[in-house]
Image (cartoon, rainbow, N blue to C red; front, side, top):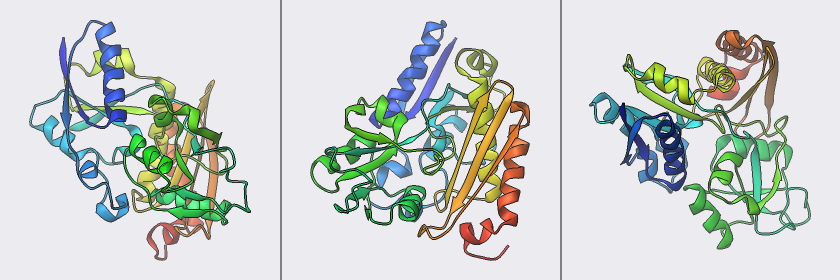
Length: 304
């Protein structure tokens, strides 16, 4: 069976697409990879929340899929909108890499605990900005967008002392030698879907079952779908500092989620445990708990 993979052209996106390609080819699929440019790739200067809403890195691939040009699209799961376009489904999620954020720096002296130095940290993620301001107010933030390798090059050129990035992307780009520390998920909780690779396909595509059998990881899927239900219920996206992490151990899915004010002045968090099959319902329940605690005011700046 032949499948055509659509992907963005960044080094990380290509790594992910070729990783899926290798898995499928090892199982007998014939695979072709086609590159597309997305809105999020075209404007590398502005923060994502200033460019537009969800789908900045997925819309071009969605449109190609609906035109019948590609069979599947490979995405970082955290880039996927919580509501996919009609006619497209999240068909599979690969086994998750370590989901933590990490600090990359030019040397060990540029660490988050070095209060006296007042280091500069590059990031344009509202979530990371909010958490840094809340837990480490001595850190100075520098707006920083671009692909992983682009941001690392900017740091090494002196645009900032350090970066906070997802470990998964850093590892996949072979840059773990620059990691100063991994950040604790109890404080620097990851973005929804962070560390996971998602595959979208046309609804009803003949190869969905065969592809899932090769690449889908059931535990990761349960965790990420719970996180996505949490985010969707809060009606959050690139404009919000929302975070969540699901972990499956045995027959229990533990879901932790929260929301932070953009200036780091306030954070709400909550936890729930459930059976993996009940993950999405639990994600909605967890969001409802935070909404009753005032999360809507934090996310949207208005009363519940």
